[in-house]
Image (cartoon, rainbow, N blue to C red):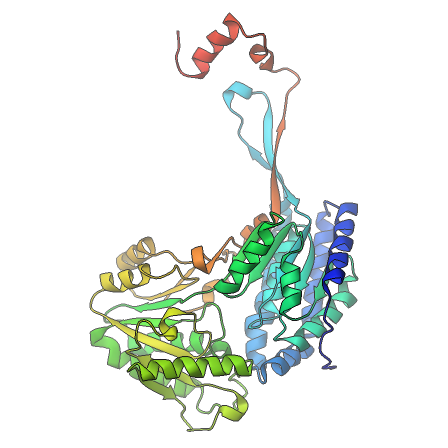
Length: 478
């Protein structure tokens, strides 16, 4: 596989690409079901035919990324999303009949989903394949053309995906562009018909501001501090295994990774012991372990080290889980590191971690844990470990989060028929499933007037007839 990095697009070139895609959409503003199914089938062939090359490119960008993780967390959900869309697309595209008030009958009404035009997708570095192709599935299913901006942190993946998309789709359906932050800024200012951004909350604010100049609708998939609540008495080993699996996937570089754990004070020692044991079992070595991924960039690696040192200086207890006691610096890997007693104002407790550092926070009762979550910005995900159905229902009713998994972590994102999206600081709007199709469609309301109708009764000049009719319409019967 070629490993040449992607060429950078200039702002003028970006505008030219967008105008070409808009012209293609105007030539075919409502692609048929067969056309859309064909697009999705091509996308699936792209993934399956070039899976090894894509996994290698991702690993090159990370320094090392487990190929199994890439297949499991990027290729599999992308393929499943496309297959799900193909199974349901005929029904999604069908006009929906809507009711008509008695006063307007015998007219009839419907809602027709219509492609919006050209959709822009800004892709982050942590899952560069899935977070490009997942939104792409929704955009193609809805009948749109698409322009994708890849992250500057994943130049090998970006270059390869650009070549593969061009080979499988030509240049009038999808275009992939690459470049640094200046290209990303120019991209976000383009007059798309919809813009979907996945990334940090801070950058999301800038993207939304840039899009507002064109009144471009936005879907923001951000992040935040996704909490885990382990209720009193829950089996520590069972909870620990699922928390560690979700946290150490991609070395914690996942927007829905467990960010911190709330555990009852009486269960804290047992849970922390179980977390250490689970990490040892899953990853007995780290440095040369092909199953464990590196931190993508020296800047991100140093950021995590700095945050950990800040917490340690503030009095936190630090528990690294490095079973073989290896020097991990040369391979840019970090072990799962439990943090107990971190000061509330340190960055580890205020900002999304995006790495394998896991603060543990004690509580005295479940109400205190729920208050702790409620006092903080609304998270992208919430994880609850509890077998009490009544309490599970109460927690679901009293918390607001983008999505929830009960008695596991991360897995709600992989469900084909569930929408995915944040709330407030963790995002706005949804994609995945039918909701993704709806997000990237204009739901056009249409009223079909009957030849014979009563509208003549409301036409001017207004006289006794309309006043008599209005008394009935407003409920003031004579």
